[in-house]
Image 1 (tube, rainbow, N blue to C red):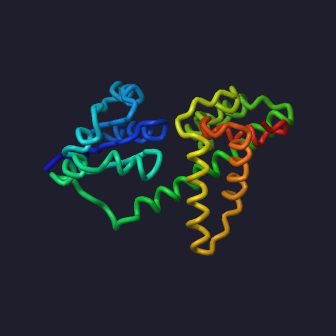
Image 2: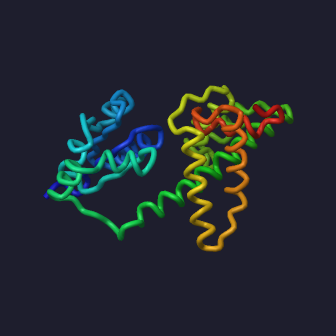
Length: 222
């Protein structure tokens, strides 16, 4: 049987790469794959093995983690050889749908964080506070999430190279609202952030990184 700490990570954008590095830091063996191989290659410096295809990444793995754009991309990545590779000695955890449910919960956390961060950066600028100083102040402390630093610097620099687009974030946020509605749960914060995403997308920023929601929070929207 394969080493129980062997993990395959499919999709190594900012979130996928961070997951892979956390696993490596915990002493696990990681094989990573990304459709654009150059996005996965920096993980080699952290000790990961970069695979040429999803099946090679999954072969012998006990756990398969995906951080891909949508269900169609996931299906394309894991069908056929990947399922065969996992079937050799893989372990599946939980009932069908449990992974998707957890992903929605994580997505809601991300959406809420982005919305508050965007308004905080906009508020700092509007009140004459250097938002870069805000990020510097929280960095390294309990409030200074690395993710907030990454997205906050994008907002401060107004440079939004896409690792996960506003269009995709809006889609995921809508799935959160649909799931909440099915359980009679009102998600006021998520609804407010979705409205911000809609503003940014309507202003032509749908393909920019989801941090571009900041532009809908500024007084001079656009």
